[in-house]
Image (spheres, rainbow, N blue to C red):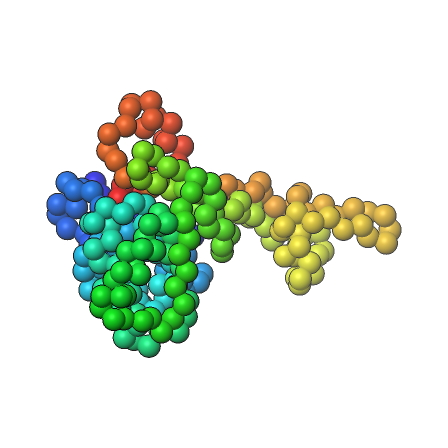
Length: 235
């Protein structure tokens, strides 16, 4: 069973053009958002993306990154319309696009023949295998698969649970020290006693791992290998 919106503790994925036939076709747009920040990232920019964007509980001006795995017309058919909509809203914040380098020529021609200039700075980052984004404790890796790119989302390791009652029973007063102990820091007290933060917290937890793939045609061994990921998305 597929859902329109997927909530993990530290991230939100939402399919932008969700319909009953969504998984019968490729080239699907979806949004990625970390709840702790306003920024929203868009994967693929299909036709009508700006309209679908406004129909959901996301603000279009919070869009900060667009990631396009290949230059298939269905992946970029809504791009120029979305960029123009951002321009009409008076946007001044820069926008980053991660795509094959040839996208630059497509945008240049579009601006030339429509006689359009954007009021914001547009950065084009050429996709290549490896780390492409490292921000907000979230890393995105790209892997080239034939003429398309696929992506891995990896979140940083999360600190374990702090044993508050144990700290209180050891007569530790609440304060900034609690935060440092939760991170595993140790303190040497004047009497020579070592206060070890690792004894007051549970083990660190691995961050969420998500795999985004663009094809349904993989071997059985491949799907067995990706079982370790918390979530697998198709686009």
